[in-house]
Image (cartoon, rainbow, N blue to C red; front, side, top):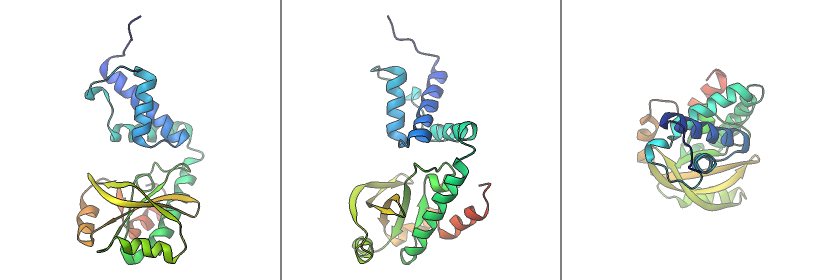
Length: 199
């Protein structure tokens, strides 16, 4: 029996919706959720690029799913995530960190990790900062922000996993202003998000 595919736009939407459910309910990251959703809906068939949803499409479906099914829990989980992020950013203030991802864009939940980028002329300064506080850490996948990758370490902060990247201080201003949509912010911006639950 031949594989059946819905019309192109419908399939793309179905993949985005399936990936969103995996992210919202099971804590998958976007690439893993997209790959699993494709496998569930298309099997081993290789799909053309125009049938595969972008992160922005999946993010919108995460928002839709949270509104429909998790509206009684997700807002409080997001608030806690943002509070934890702010406490880390204040502790890291000498490195003028910015935070990005789910804690900023409003899709954060109890599954979400923190994604923070600190700024230093010497990335080893981040390692020393962690060592001086007896925080166990390990190198991890590079942090990705604004189409660039940065060396990163992973550790736990208040029982939340953190991916902490490091960049040259000269990059900071450009990274903060690069995206007009709310995706990354500094400690002051995160504080404003905490004060305005509607965001």
